[in-house]
Length: 143
Picture (cartoon, helix red, strand yellow):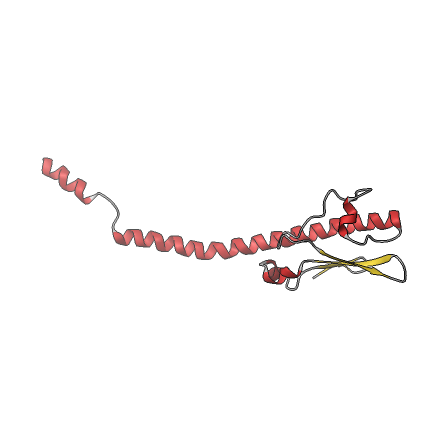
């Protein structure tokens, strides 16, 4: 009777190599399907956050314009004096500052362009919105 238990324990010790290979193959297939979807969803959320940041900066710029009859020379002016923002956010795709270009029209700055950083083209966000985003007072947010 002891031989029966000993034989049974020896045959049920672990998994066979084939079973382990099948499990590893299934995990690899699932990873190959899920990782690109996760990266695309992450890039889409970063683009949405970038759009929100740019709209918030534009709102602060418009408030500055109402009070001063001109746009600021640089974005950091929004955080000093009568602070229109606590801090100017960086682009979530590249973690770099947005590119702000105030445009003079024979006197004070009366127009501007706000763009995503140039490093956007080498980030995953470029696959969602190729070329980055631009915000202008007259045109709004455009890809």
